[in-house]
Image (cartoon, rainbow over all chains, first blue to last red; front, side, top):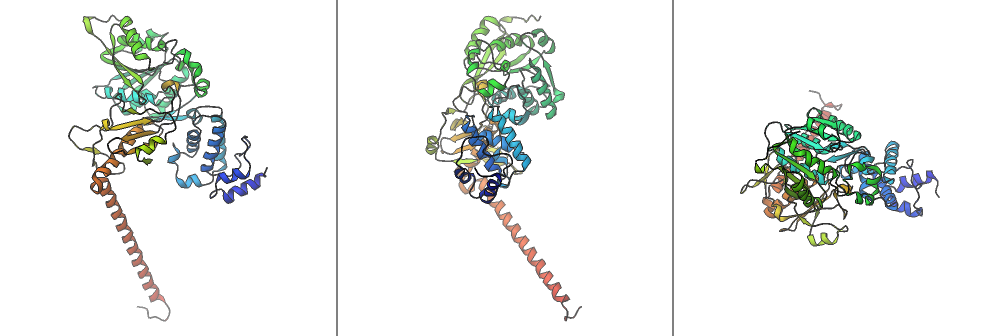
Length: 342
Length: 170
């Protein structure tokens, strides 16, 4: 094996023009972690290539994207496309290289990219990410779009309640876009409550958001005390079926809070609690917006008919992969029934 | 950003099983002008609005490359590339500029609108007209800078000629 100084010299000479391929070819590459170390001098492009290959060899999913996002982040950009060409070709500093190696090793252990770089974007807000708080999914961006369409038509200062806020993605996205909206966010996880508060501060939205540590199943009474006249109740509640949990990818199983995912035998445990509460806290023209499992819309409709008199499933919308994903429920004041509040 | 065309070549190059779906009715279109009016779009970097060809959601097919997994909470992927196809013209726009799918979808539509405008209006497209204007402006500026430099150079030469020993000073 070549000595380090020779390797460095070789890279300096041929690094930019010939690239990594030639170097690796001459070294009879073996898939071992001692191949390149943070003390070798390389540029960003080479780093992306090295780590993409290493992720591939180790069965890490999205090897190219993982490599690109992490290295772009170290270089101060959100995407690799956002890094200037000049910077991609320039040699990385010792510090940058060490940081890249440190972060990429976390990804080797299947830590989600969002936790590795400790941030992610949701629509037009950048949020801090911290395990085990649930990482916002792209589908949920569409849920926000649906709620926005509703909320922006309301006059005055409508109140939005989010159940299961996680990192605060939904509430903060709404507040950022609609300055007249006030929001209350709840989560049964202390870490989630803390992270949502932190993200609210980072975005300067803390004045319009109240975050509480509440379990909607165990503390229904508390919810009733905290909220009334809610214009929109929005939630991306845990909706996975318990039996589906074991087949989740390691990124999710090892690092994300299972309580944020597991919705019980039929995935409806938390949803049922939300829908039971909803009629008592919603204003007359208030709505519930839920993200659900594709099997849920019909199950929810059936369950509502038997169990909740004053709420009906008004619409089911599909996500970008054409799966039924969003349920919109409205208060049903048919039959002159009056609500008896506890 | 990539401009991919023709559509048939694009379809064959797909590796992951993906869903070609019509535009989800679950999301309100970003570009929704009042009926009959031309779509006015704020083009990034430009001061005034530009009249562009109207974008019909019915004519678009959108694809979000996220692999074949169950989606939703059961999947955590960072791929957020949006591919937008305009069926009548066959123009395809791919966008993965940001880490947000929602923003990529909106940008893909903006780019599609610009491409369609050029496609249908040709050299009359506002996009091309402005591009040309910008180029002319640039060339004018270059010319003026060159002339200025030339003027300065001549002035300098004139001064040096005056200060050379043997010449009479005024």
